[in-house]
Image (cartoon, rainbow, N blue to C red; front, side):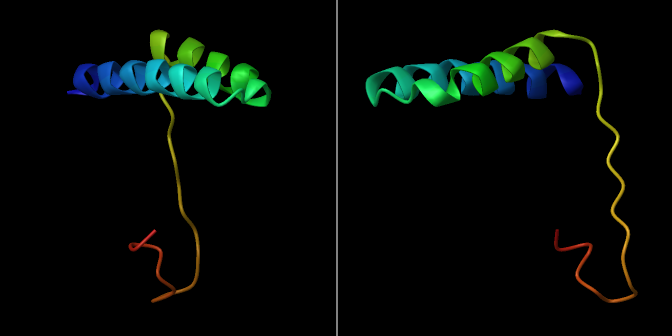
Length: 60
């Protein structure tokens, strides 16, 4: 199940590279490169959201 998600991230980074080049957004180059590196690695991210009861965590 994580494989299709990884493919979408890679496609997204390609699109971001094209858009940043088109609009001369050189400041995004390092961030896009970091996203590409992470998307091509087998690493996973675990996310936990903490907060008060009925504080909108599930909407996050």
